[in-house]
Image (cartoon, rainbow, N blue to C red; front, side):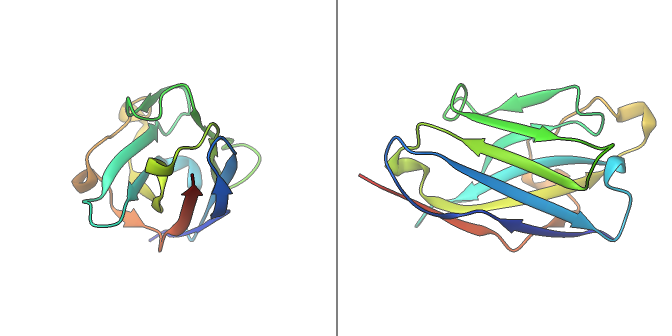
Length: 130
């Protein structure tokens, strides 16, 4: 069992930046592929970005490519980050991090589907004003 806790959300003007953190506890962090998803007002939860267990592979939704960056450091801590730059009002959403337990043989895989993930955080609100 792993517990996830997001932080770093808030209110920012369009064009600004925020850095979200997702801290994992309860199990070996490096055994999990991680992902960020978001759910805007009146919308379904959608994929944002994913990183493999090894950290070597990432995949971004087209809507955030070039603006958002995911990072993790398995050796130093149990946190995965989402750096969000050039924010737009349409980025307004609750952002969730998610974890999927994977073995060594799939350590380079990333996952984009909601149903692929085993554990979810409670979410952190990001609001971008125009």
